[in-house]
Length: 496
Image (cartoon, rainbow, N blue to C red; front, side, top):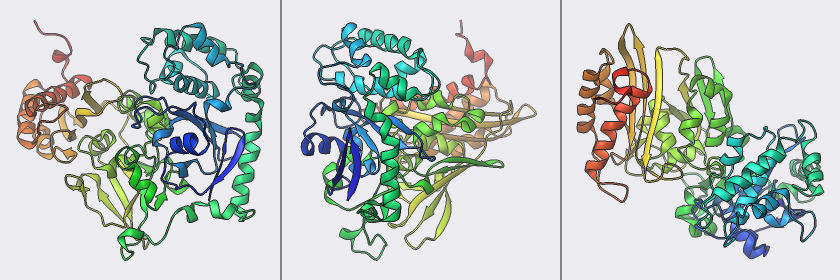
């Protein structure tokens, strides 16, 4: 039995954990303010807020999520907020809604609710509001009518109001100003009660724990029909197989605390398999050694999707153009696999992909952790990620690539190059990297590596580009690596 708060109401439901939060909100609870749009996480019309109790149990952190790709089971123990749950009195408007109305930010109105929820999520964020952060909060919302300028003005108006928000007692101020109703202040205690009841097994709480959401048996000897499907953030599987997931048992791993988090042990980073792309972006330790990481990750997807999509999910999806996969290949990552018997093994990520959508793992093995050597924050080491897609943001890559190079004595002593969209699997370009070793970072060295890369890849034409186009893209993106790393000053400026 799943239990969570939907707006101001505690709900218990036996609806399938693999069904979507969107369908539950609209069809089971008849809250029609949350719209059905693309069902792929692109348009943002179905955006809701999902609040999770922090580790200390004192505050609730809210994040905007696209409910069309949120597994209902991932709402367990949390606070889900739809547009019906943010107005203090029927007929009144919140400051967010008032700003959109005042600036003419709603025309047909279909997308408006998604913008309202994303901006409300920004208001609830404990981080100080900045002009760029308030705009970033709506990067997952699409509007076909307004041309966005009116919505940008509304966001700017909201930012001005939030500059008055105090550093302490923020929720009290937000409630007093009408951003959220007063009942929000009661949610930490109510979610603690849910958590404590589940831990004690009292009042039906035990039946809502992950152990009973997780069906059995799941091992290799279990009948195929009885095995649970592993489900993380849902950003891939709920696009491809929503009906199948609703009909079958699922093992939810998104909220597994043992698979979350980022830590550094000496010269190695360890990342839990259920860590999200947004958590990577926000990690101060990662940004310290990869200062452009936020810039790279903003090419991966929108804010709501980054808050849902997990690192291991991107790996196991096995897409030849998985953005996180390409990054971590160049970083020299290994993955830890655990089977149903609890046996664990480490495997280089580059050896994980055998053929298109074919992985070097048994049916009962799951990715539990990722590790990679910490890049040194020094002039000797360089990392870069490049991506080209039909849209700059919120799109699947035509070609993506990452590079890590280490220089010593004016020569390239070590390097890794990866590329996606140019073969049946995410590729570690071993031969191309080998062509760089022992060479100075010159234009001649680059040209030699580009020639080797053309022999190492095997792109095919598809909706994202012809074979020739993808070959040209990789050729140019390898050059972009050298330029962005500052290794070829002569290429940084246009040539006469």
